[in-house]
Image (tube, rainbow, N blue to C red; front, top):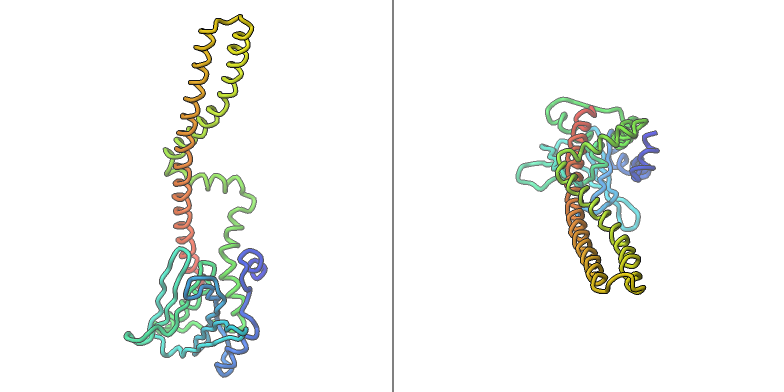
Length: 280
């Protein structure tokens, strides 16, 4: 189920490639992979497909080569002194640090989609540095990875299952801090609609009550000219009002969309943090 969710909704590998697993474990002398994660960002923060793998004594970082082969950098866990994470809205960085004056032993960049899987590796390393051994069974590596990556999607599905109206009301709740802007925007939208409906009525009035009676000699020409100028002036005024209302609506709604998106990102970031803390 979790692997199907990853392939269908997240569109990333559902597990580490079998040939890469064999290469890493062979380089470790038969040591099994306990945990792994996809480092799906490269140095330029573009999507890639590197992998970080954790064993009982080593950490490996595998990057794809130009010919389809893998470049594997293996680090002895005894050399790791500090694990540092720099979170972001769309890009996160995991640093494995050795001596204080040395360059990082490994730099792993990943999106929020891989946050849970990377947090698993970070948790085990930090517990080991604190003297508390946590050793997941190696046969569970695929299950733990799939569960960590698919968990946010499963949680989102559980929230909306059979509760479409509740989801709508919850989304509307994000607009509550911006009631004033929403009210002005809706009024401006109503003004635009009304201002678009009146000109056809004025045009019909001008033809039926002014132009045709004046041509038939029923209406005095001076009175016809006065009514015509009034109708044309009303059309011009309505055009100005419509353009002003459209400008207000566009400015308010575009900025409002950015504010709501910011609030959604902040809540999602907090939710992912709480999920990562409860993985183990």
